[in-house]
Image 1 (cartoon, rainbow, N blue to C red):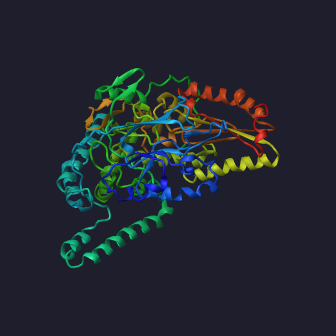
Image 2 (image 1 turned 45 degrees about the vertical axis):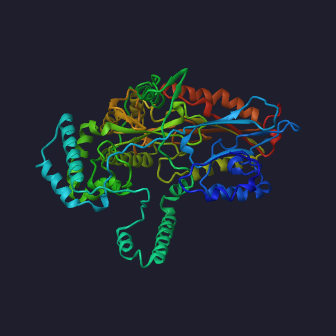
Image 3 (image 1 turned 120 degrees about the horizontal axis):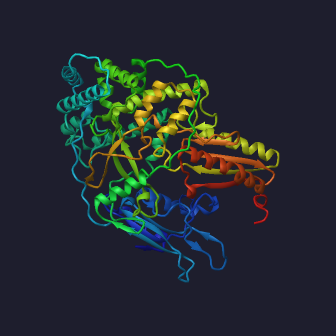
Length: 588
């Protein structure tokens, strides 16, 4: 459907049902930062308010990356804007959307979009459990009965058997004493059993009152959620205005010059994209080990705190046990869990059962072409009991890092009390101080390619040893990062569990962020997990660029060579902060 008169179509699509798929494309002739970028001035956005409301009311999302110029003036060369759009309420069906840059004699660029319009039916999966109605006492009783008297465990194979028995006993007991959910397309999280009873008894007599109760319940639920936004849920609330990750069929993929249609070929392409072969590190070993930091055995209180902080509704791994199960069973099985965790750390061995991941392939939002493997990302669903031990170790390492100053002060993200806002304040303060002295700030941003997957075990151990991490923790971490397995699933296809040759750190593990160390700089640097920002202050942009090219980039390349890391050159960004545009590059 081509649109040329924005005011003429507003009322008609607003009457479409929720199940109707909509694609609108054409010249909307409206300017707004939502699709045009941050450079759009406020005085040009007034006419777009009605269009914005229409998009939001019908859940329509743009298919082009934000700021894509679609109109190039013929009378004023160099002037461009974003007024042609393609929007849809089914972004999960989009395969690719981009501009044709061939000149057809028009000041509007031709656009191309490809869609997957074949009818797909999501295969039936394993029935989900209503854990809020589980009989936790009977579950715990059966688990303890199956485990029998506690015997001393001294070897790794014995620990593997204990973990295997414990996990299988818990899963089997939970399956027997937890009823299945019976979801429908109209199921809502806030729909309580009390509402169900009231609906059954009074629907005929109090239909209008029932409708008001529903509206009140929804409003109250949302209000309570927003009231708690300051407790770490603000960003989660923000994600609700974005298109949700939808199940969608992965059609033909293109890798280099090959066209991949078979699931096994697609799987190999995803493995190559998600877990590329790592460069061998050239880290020099430490010939004299520094004095190690003290290490104490873990306690029940530590495990309980990590369990309390964990989200109970996180998706489980292969065993199907969410964290909610361990929250309810903790008071019954805390000694068993503490014993397993203690043995695991003392042996320096992360059980094999916990090193197996269930990987789900999802689309990266806003990509122009979904026929290439790089437009997708892996989500690893891990064993939740293993993640609990990882969270305990992450808290230990974080405590040691903060108490003994093992990480730079400018390392943000994955650390308590060091947020995105603080990272921006550090940069803003540096810019203000430079401008006060009439100087220019030049910032270069590096993105570490596959930061978690490319972590090398040998290089990681050398860096941990240099930071005086105790040998008992290093040995356990080496086991945690080694010999990992996974199954990969998309559409109705899932592979068998196979070894991952280049797994690195498990992305999604609570332990991984603290183990990704930044590039070592001195001043003028900020890092946020796998993103690094280096800035220079000088009298001109040319002076800053010369220092960056002569000192900073060689240092980054040397660090990458030592650790086997790799930076994504296509994601490297450079920006000048100056009071006058003419001061940026005088020769341009």
